[in-house]
Each structure stands twice: as structure tokens, then as C-alpha cells.
Amino acid sequence: MDERSHRKDLIGVVISRTGNKTIKVAYAYKAPHPMYKKEMKRRTILHAHDEVNECQCGDKVELMETRPLSRLKRWRVVRVVSKSPQLVESKKA
Image (tube, rainbow, N blue to C red; front, side, top):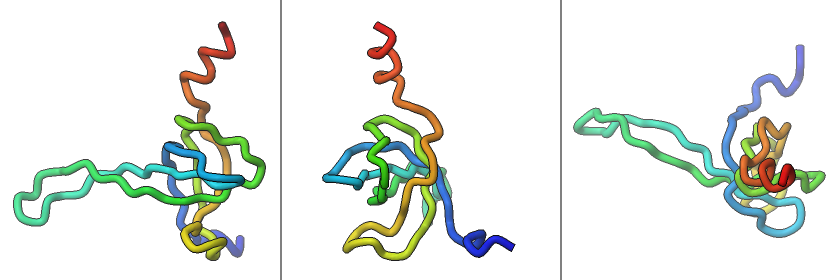
């Protein structure tokens, strides 16, 4: 059995590159309002480790939970799911 199979993983969008090998990822989800039960959009900002500095703003990335790497970083990039549409269009032109 894989040792790391119990770790959380999620998909989010890169909103910022903050320093070397660090990105900020927005994880969007829906949660019901406690009283009215209406579905509300929520988001969480996560700091993640990008070992090869391959992520750009707007990229959709898959993250995996890991040990604490710094004061805020608790996630690392597993793979880039899709590149930012703006970057793909600018490379074609």
C-alpha cells in the first residue's frame, strides 16, 4: 500500500507567486449557510511549495498535503492540471 495515500489532495488556481518556489493557491468550494441552508461560494487561500518554479498565475494545479515546510506552507504541487488561458494565447501570437 502507498504510504502517502492518506494525505489530502485538492485542485485550485494559482493567484500569486510569492518569492522563490512558493505560490498562493485559491481553493474554491461551496458550503451551506448555517441558518438558511443556501449554498454559498467560499474560498481558502493556501501557500504551496513549487519545487521547479513551473506554475504561473492562472494555472490550475493539484496540491498534496505535506509536512510543514515553513511558517505558512503545508502543501506542495503535485502537477499542473492546465495552464493559464492568457499565457497559452500569448505564446501563439
